[in-house]
Length: 396
Image (cartoon, rainbow, N blue to C red; front, side):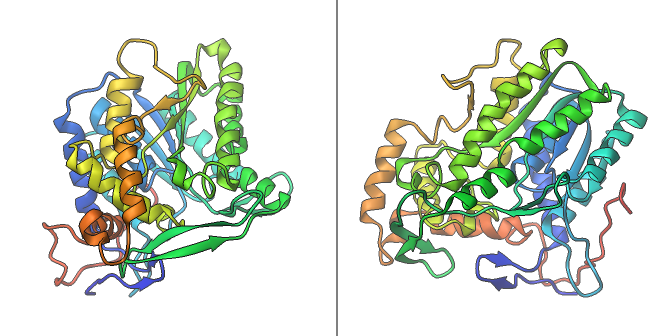
Protein backbone atom coordinates (compact mmCIF):
# COMPACT_ATOMS: atom_id res chain seq x y z
CA UNK A 1 0.00 0.00 0.00
CA UNK A 2 0.97 3.66 -0.36
CA UNK A 3 1.25 4.93 3.21
CA UNK A 4 0.62 8.61 3.90
CA UNK A 5 0.16 10.49 7.19
CA UNK A 6 -3.49 10.56 8.21
CA UNK A 7 -4.27 12.96 11.05
CA UNK A 8 -7.00 13.14 13.65
CA UNK A 9 -6.40 16.09 15.93
CA UNK A 10 -3.02 15.67 17.57
CA UNK A 11 -2.73 12.01 16.60
CA UNK A 12 -1.33 10.47 13.43
CA UNK A 13 -3.34 7.35 12.61
CA UNK A 14 -0.75 5.83 10.27
CA UNK A 15 2.93 4.94 10.52
CA UNK A 16 5.48 4.18 7.81
CA UNK A 17 7.59 1.05 8.37
CA UNK A 18 10.45 2.18 6.13
CA UNK A 19 10.49 5.61 7.75
CA UNK A 20 10.54 4.11 11.24
CA UNK A 21 13.35 1.82 10.11
CA UNK A 22 15.30 4.83 8.84
CA UNK A 23 14.73 6.65 12.11
CA UNK A 24 16.16 3.70 14.07
CA UNK A 25 19.14 3.42 11.71
CA UNK A 26 19.86 7.14 12.08
CA UNK A 27 19.84 6.81 15.86
CA UNK A 28 22.12 3.78 15.74
CA UNK A 29 24.59 5.61 13.53
CA UNK A 30 24.61 8.57 15.90
CA UNK A 31 25.40 6.37 18.91
CA UNK A 32 28.14 4.53 17.04
CA UNK A 33 29.67 7.84 15.92
CA UNK A 34 30.12 8.91 19.56
CA UNK A 35 32.30 5.96 20.52
CA UNK A 36 32.05 3.07 22.95
CA UNK A 37 30.47 3.49 26.39
CA UNK A 38 31.66 1.20 29.19
CA UNK A 39 28.11 0.59 30.34
CA UNK A 40 25.74 -2.19 31.36
CA UNK A 41 25.79 -5.42 29.35
CA UNK A 42 22.37 -6.85 30.19
CA UNK A 43 19.57 -4.31 30.03
CA UNK A 44 15.80 -4.37 30.54
CA UNK A 45 13.93 -1.43 29.01
CA UNK A 46 10.33 -1.04 30.17
CA UNK A 47 8.68 1.22 27.60
CA UNK A 48 11.20 0.43 24.85
CA UNK A 49 9.48 1.28 21.58
CA UNK A 50 9.52 5.08 21.21
CA UNK A 51 11.13 8.25 22.54
CA UNK A 52 13.53 8.07 25.47
CA UNK A 53 12.92 4.34 26.01
CA UNK A 54 13.83 3.45 22.43
CA UNK A 55 16.85 5.76 22.61
CA UNK A 56 17.92 3.99 25.81
CA UNK A 57 17.68 0.60 24.15
CA UNK A 58 19.65 1.78 21.13
CA UNK A 59 22.33 3.44 23.28
CA UNK A 60 22.71 0.34 25.45
CA UNK A 61 22.98 -1.99 22.46
CA UNK A 62 25.09 0.03 20.06
CA UNK A 63 27.05 2.09 22.61
CA UNK A 64 27.83 -0.72 25.06
CA UNK A 65 27.16 -3.93 23.05
CA UNK A 66 24.45 -4.81 25.57
CA UNK A 67 21.92 -7.60 25.36
CA UNK A 68 18.50 -5.95 25.64
CA UNK A 69 15.02 -7.09 26.55
CA UNK A 70 12.38 -4.52 25.58
CA UNK A 71 8.82 -4.32 26.94
CA UNK A 72 6.16 -2.26 25.15
CA UNK A 73 2.48 -2.20 24.26
CA UNK A 74 2.01 -1.67 20.52
CA UNK A 75 -0.43 -2.71 17.82
CA UNK A 76 0.88 -4.84 14.96
CA UNK A 77 -0.39 -4.22 11.45
CA UNK A 78 -3.43 -5.83 9.93
CA UNK A 79 -4.03 -6.06 6.18
CA UNK A 80 -4.52 -2.51 4.90
CA UNK A 81 -3.92 -0.91 8.31
CA UNK A 82 -0.49 0.07 9.55
CA UNK A 83 1.00 -0.89 12.88
CA UNK A 84 1.78 1.72 15.51
CA UNK A 85 5.18 3.39 15.05
CA UNK A 86 6.59 1.69 18.15
CA UNK A 87 5.94 -1.71 16.55
CA UNK A 88 7.89 -0.76 13.43
CA UNK A 89 10.65 0.83 15.53
CA UNK A 90 11.02 -2.37 17.54
CA UNK A 91 11.06 -4.56 14.43
CA UNK A 92 13.81 -2.40 12.94
CA UNK A 93 15.78 -2.35 16.17
CA UNK A 94 15.74 -6.13 16.51
CA UNK A 95 16.79 -6.58 12.89
CA UNK A 96 19.75 -4.20 13.30
CA UNK A 97 20.73 -5.70 16.68
CA UNK A 98 20.69 -9.24 15.30
CA UNK A 99 22.74 -8.18 12.27
CA UNK A 100 25.29 -6.78 14.72
CA UNK A 101 25.35 -10.08 16.64
CA UNK A 102 23.54 -8.62 19.65
CA UNK A 103 20.92 -10.36 21.78
CA UNK A 104 17.54 -8.60 21.47
CA UNK A 105 14.13 -9.89 22.47
CA UNK A 106 10.85 -8.06 23.00
CA UNK A 107 7.59 -8.49 24.91
CA UNK A 108 4.42 -6.84 23.61
CA UNK A 109 1.87 -6.40 26.39
CA UNK A 110 0.71 -4.35 29.35
CA UNK A 111 3.82 -3.62 31.43
CA UNK A 112 1.58 -2.86 34.43
CA UNK A 113 0.30 -6.44 34.46
CA UNK A 114 1.63 -9.34 36.52
CA UNK A 115 1.61 -11.52 33.40
CA UNK A 116 4.08 -9.33 31.49
CA UNK A 117 6.34 -9.07 34.55
CA UNK A 118 6.35 -12.86 34.78
CA UNK A 119 7.10 -13.20 31.06
CA UNK A 120 10.08 -10.87 31.48
CA UNK A 121 11.26 -12.85 34.51
CA UNK A 122 11.07 -16.12 32.57
CA UNK A 123 13.06 -14.73 29.63
CA UNK A 124 15.73 -13.21 31.88
CA UNK A 125 16.10 -16.49 33.77
CA UNK A 126 16.40 -18.48 30.57
CA UNK A 127 18.61 -16.15 28.55
CA UNK A 128 20.36 -13.48 30.60
CA UNK A 129 20.79 -14.62 34.18
CA UNK A 130 20.93 -11.22 35.84
CA UNK A 131 20.22 -7.64 34.74
CA UNK A 132 22.67 -4.74 35.20
CA UNK A 133 20.41 -1.86 34.13
CA UNK A 134 16.64 -1.38 34.21
CA UNK A 135 15.22 1.60 32.34
CA UNK A 136 11.67 2.57 33.31
CA UNK A 137 10.17 4.74 30.57
CA UNK A 138 6.43 4.08 30.46
CA UNK A 139 4.13 6.76 29.05
CA UNK A 140 0.60 5.43 29.35
CA UNK A 141 -2.56 7.43 30.06
CA UNK A 142 -4.19 4.48 31.85
CA UNK A 143 -3.21 1.73 34.25
CA UNK A 144 -5.14 -1.34 35.28
CA UNK A 145 -4.02 -2.05 38.83
CA UNK A 146 -3.31 -5.80 38.94
CA UNK A 147 -4.00 -5.94 42.68
CA UNK A 148 -7.47 -4.34 42.61
CA UNK A 149 -8.62 -4.67 38.99
CA UNK A 150 -9.42 -0.92 38.98
CA UNK A 151 -8.64 1.05 35.80
CA UNK A 152 -7.02 4.39 36.64
CA UNK A 153 -6.83 7.29 34.16
CA UNK A 154 -4.34 10.12 34.41
CA UNK A 155 -5.41 13.68 33.67
CA UNK A 156 -3.52 16.81 32.74
CA UNK A 157 -4.97 19.53 34.95
CA UNK A 158 -3.80 22.36 37.18
CA UNK A 159 -4.31 22.16 40.93
CA UNK A 160 -6.31 24.80 42.80
CA UNK A 161 -7.40 27.12 40.01
CA UNK A 162 -8.16 27.32 36.30
CA UNK A 163 -5.07 27.83 34.15
CA UNK A 164 -5.17 30.14 31.13
CA UNK A 165 -2.27 30.82 28.78
CA UNK A 166 -1.17 30.67 25.15
CA UNK A 167 -0.95 27.54 23.07
CA UNK A 168 -0.48 26.75 19.39
CA UNK A 169 -2.11 24.36 16.96
CA UNK A 170 1.12 23.15 15.41
CA UNK A 171 -0.65 22.04 12.24
CA UNK A 172 -2.02 25.48 11.42
CA UNK A 173 0.34 27.69 13.42
CA UNK A 174 -2.58 29.45 15.10
CA UNK A 175 -1.69 30.88 18.51
CA UNK A 176 -4.63 31.21 20.89
CA UNK A 177 -5.49 31.26 24.57
CA UNK A 178 -6.60 28.08 26.26
CA UNK A 179 -8.12 27.48 29.69
CA UNK A 180 -7.89 24.23 31.66
CA UNK A 181 -10.17 23.65 34.63
CA UNK A 182 -8.59 22.64 37.92
CA UNK A 183 -8.62 19.05 39.10
CA UNK A 184 -10.23 17.31 42.05
CA UNK A 185 -8.53 15.01 44.58
CA UNK A 186 -9.47 11.88 42.62
CA UNK A 187 -7.75 13.30 39.55
CA UNK A 188 -4.53 13.70 41.52
CA UNK A 189 -4.74 10.22 43.04
CA UNK A 190 -5.45 8.58 39.67
CA UNK A 191 -2.64 10.42 37.92
CA UNK A 192 -0.15 9.42 40.63
CA UNK A 193 -1.39 5.84 40.36
CA UNK A 194 -0.72 5.78 36.60
CA UNK A 195 2.40 7.92 36.29
CA UNK A 196 4.01 7.75 39.73
CA UNK A 197 6.55 5.25 40.99
CA UNK A 198 4.35 2.40 42.22
CA UNK A 199 4.75 0.20 39.16
CA UNK A 200 8.49 0.96 38.95
CA UNK A 201 8.76 -0.39 42.50
CA UNK A 202 6.76 -3.50 41.61
CA UNK A 203 9.11 -4.27 38.70
CA UNK A 204 12.23 -3.94 40.86
CA UNK A 205 10.74 -5.97 43.70
CA UNK A 206 9.69 -8.75 41.31
CA UNK A 207 13.14 -8.94 39.71
CA UNK A 208 14.95 -8.82 43.07
CA UNK A 209 12.75 -11.54 44.54
CA UNK A 210 13.81 -13.86 41.71
CA UNK A 211 17.51 -12.95 42.17
CA UNK A 212 17.64 -11.39 38.69
CA UNK A 213 19.43 -8.16 39.64
CA UNK A 214 23.20 -8.14 39.37
CA UNK A 215 25.54 -6.68 41.99
CA UNK A 216 25.66 -2.91 41.43
CA UNK A 217 22.47 -2.95 39.36
CA UNK A 218 21.18 0.49 38.37
CA UNK A 219 17.64 1.53 37.53
CA UNK A 220 16.58 4.82 35.97
CA UNK A 221 13.19 6.43 35.43
CA UNK A 222 12.64 9.55 33.34
CA UNK A 223 11.03 12.80 34.44
CA UNK A 224 10.61 16.42 33.41
CA UNK A 225 10.55 19.72 35.26
CA UNK A 226 10.35 22.50 32.67
CA UNK A 227 10.09 26.27 32.87
CA UNK A 228 7.91 28.61 34.92
CA UNK A 229 5.47 29.18 32.05
CA UNK A 230 4.40 25.50 31.98
CA UNK A 231 4.45 25.00 35.76
CA UNK A 232 0.71 25.40 36.51
CA UNK A 233 -0.31 22.75 34.00
CA UNK A 234 2.71 20.51 34.33
CA UNK A 235 5.08 20.50 37.31
CA UNK A 236 2.61 22.07 39.74
CA UNK A 237 -0.36 20.21 38.25
CA UNK A 238 -1.54 16.62 38.45
CA UNK A 239 1.37 15.30 36.37
CA UNK A 240 3.79 17.13 38.64
CA UNK A 241 2.38 15.27 41.64
CA UNK A 242 3.00 12.01 39.80
CA UNK A 243 6.55 13.10 38.97
CA UNK A 244 7.12 14.03 42.64
CA UNK A 245 6.03 10.51 43.57
CA UNK A 246 8.27 8.99 40.91
CA UNK A 247 11.26 10.97 42.15
CA UNK A 248 10.62 10.02 45.79
CA UNK A 249 10.39 6.39 44.70
CA UNK A 250 14.01 6.47 43.55
CA UNK A 251 15.09 6.78 47.20
CA UNK A 252 12.92 3.90 48.39
CA UNK A 253 14.15 1.66 45.55
CA UNK A 254 17.75 2.59 46.37
CA UNK A 255 17.09 1.41 49.94
CA UNK A 256 15.84 -1.97 48.67
CA UNK A 257 18.97 -2.33 46.48
CA UNK A 258 21.47 -1.56 49.25
CA UNK A 259 22.42 -5.21 49.75
CA UNK A 260 23.32 -5.37 46.04
CA UNK A 261 25.16 -2.03 46.13
CA UNK A 262 22.57 -0.92 43.58
CA UNK A 263 21.07 2.49 42.93
CA UNK A 264 17.91 4.05 41.54
CA UNK A 265 17.92 7.42 39.81
CA UNK A 266 15.49 9.74 38.14
CA UNK A 267 16.88 11.52 35.11
CA UNK A 268 15.25 14.87 34.36
CA UNK A 269 15.26 15.18 30.58
CA UNK A 270 14.71 17.95 28.06
CA UNK A 271 11.37 18.99 26.52
CA UNK A 272 11.00 17.16 23.22
CA UNK A 273 8.29 16.40 20.69
CA UNK A 274 6.54 13.16 21.64
CA UNK A 275 3.05 11.79 21.04
CA UNK A 276 2.22 12.70 24.64
CA UNK A 277 3.69 16.22 24.66
CA UNK A 278 1.88 17.15 21.44
CA UNK A 279 -1.44 16.79 23.23
CA UNK A 280 -0.47 18.94 26.23
CA UNK A 281 -1.67 22.53 25.88
CA UNK A 282 1.09 25.18 26.11
CA UNK A 283 3.89 22.63 25.57
CA UNK A 284 3.96 22.75 21.71
CA UNK A 285 4.34 26.53 21.77
CA UNK A 286 7.05 26.34 24.41
CA UNK A 287 8.94 23.62 22.49
CA UNK A 288 8.77 25.52 19.18
CA UNK A 289 10.32 28.59 20.87
CA UNK A 290 12.84 26.47 22.80
CA UNK A 291 13.95 24.71 19.61
CA UNK A 292 14.61 28.03 17.92
CA UNK A 293 16.76 29.30 20.78
CA UNK A 294 18.67 26.06 21.37
CA UNK A 295 19.37 25.52 17.68
CA UNK A 296 20.65 29.10 17.43
CA UNK A 297 22.96 28.38 20.37
CA UNK A 298 24.12 25.03 18.97
CA UNK A 299 22.64 23.19 21.96
CA UNK A 300 19.66 21.36 20.47
CA UNK A 301 19.28 17.66 21.23
CA UNK A 302 16.73 15.03 20.34
CA UNK A 303 16.00 11.86 22.32
CA UNK A 304 19.03 9.94 21.10
CA UNK A 305 21.45 12.81 21.76
CA UNK A 306 20.01 13.27 25.26
CA UNK A 307 20.28 9.61 26.21
CA UNK A 308 23.72 9.11 24.66
CA UNK A 309 24.96 12.10 26.70
CA UNK A 310 23.23 10.72 29.81
CA UNK A 311 25.09 7.42 29.44
CA UNK A 312 28.46 8.79 28.37
CA UNK A 313 28.72 11.90 30.54
CA UNK A 314 26.67 10.99 33.61
CA UNK A 315 26.14 7.28 34.22
CA UNK A 316 29.30 5.63 32.94
CA UNK A 317 32.21 7.98 33.54
CA UNK A 318 33.91 5.85 36.18
CA UNK A 319 33.06 8.50 38.78
CA UNK A 320 30.10 9.02 41.09
CA UNK A 321 26.94 9.98 39.19
CA UNK A 322 26.38 13.75 39.58
CA UNK A 323 22.96 14.74 40.91
CA UNK A 324 21.17 17.88 42.06
CA UNK A 325 20.15 18.63 45.65
CA UNK A 326 17.12 16.34 45.25
CA UNK A 327 19.18 13.40 43.99
CA UNK A 328 18.12 13.78 40.34
CA UNK A 329 20.34 13.53 37.29
CA UNK A 330 19.92 16.74 35.30
CA UNK A 331 20.27 16.17 31.58
CA UNK A 332 17.91 19.12 31.04
CA UNK A 333 20.83 21.35 32.07
CA UNK A 334 21.17 23.04 28.67
CA UNK A 335 17.43 23.70 28.36
CA UNK A 336 17.25 25.23 31.83
CA UNK A 337 20.29 27.50 31.48
CA UNK A 338 19.39 31.05 32.53
CA UNK A 339 20.36 32.53 29.16
CA UNK A 340 18.23 30.00 27.26
CA UNK A 341 15.18 30.47 29.48
CA UNK A 342 15.39 34.25 29.38
CA UNK A 343 15.39 34.20 25.57
CA UNK A 344 12.43 31.79 25.50
CA UNK A 345 10.49 33.96 28.00
CA UNK A 346 11.03 37.03 25.84
CA UNK A 347 9.80 35.19 22.73
CA UNK A 348 6.83 33.77 24.65
CA UNK A 349 5.60 37.28 25.46
CA UNK A 350 5.90 38.25 21.78
CA UNK A 351 4.46 35.10 20.17
CA UNK A 352 1.45 35.51 17.88
CA UNK A 353 -0.02 33.60 14.98
CA UNK A 354 1.53 36.15 12.63
CA UNK A 355 5.11 35.98 13.87
CA UNK A 356 5.54 32.43 15.23
CA UNK A 357 6.94 31.02 11.98
CA UNK A 358 9.76 33.58 12.28
CA UNK A 359 10.47 33.75 16.01
CA UNK A 360 9.87 30.06 16.70
CA UNK A 361 10.78 26.77 15.05
CA UNK A 362 7.32 25.53 14.21
CA UNK A 363 8.68 23.79 11.12
CA UNK A 364 11.17 21.89 13.28
CA UNK A 365 8.36 20.92 15.64
CA UNK A 366 6.23 19.62 12.76
CA UNK A 367 9.18 17.69 11.30
CA UNK A 368 9.90 16.00 14.62
CA UNK A 369 6.22 15.17 15.02
CA UNK A 370 5.97 13.51 11.60
CA UNK A 371 9.30 11.74 12.17
CA UNK A 372 7.72 10.04 15.20
CA UNK A 373 5.46 8.17 12.78
CA UNK A 374 8.14 7.46 10.17
CA UNK A 375 7.35 10.34 7.83
CA UNK A 376 9.65 13.05 6.50
CA UNK A 377 12.93 11.12 6.12
CA UNK A 378 14.99 12.01 3.06
CA UNK A 379 16.12 8.45 2.26
CA UNK A 380 12.60 7.00 2.12
CA UNK A 381 10.49 6.85 -1.06
CA UNK A 382 7.03 7.63 0.25
CA UNK A 383 5.46 7.20 -3.19
CA UNK A 384 6.50 3.55 -3.37
CA UNK A 385 4.27 0.63 -2.46
CA UNK A 386 5.19 -0.49 1.05
CA UNK A 387 4.37 -3.72 2.88
CA UNK A 388 2.68 -2.76 6.11
CA UNK A 389 2.82 -6.33 7.46
CA UNK A 390 6.12 -6.15 9.32
CA UNK A 391 6.91 -8.58 12.12
CA UNK A 392 8.99 -8.16 15.25
CA UNK A 393 11.22 -11.20 14.92
CA UNK A 394 11.27 -12.29 18.58
CA UNK A 395 7.49 -11.91 18.88
CA UNK A 396 6.31 -13.34 15.57
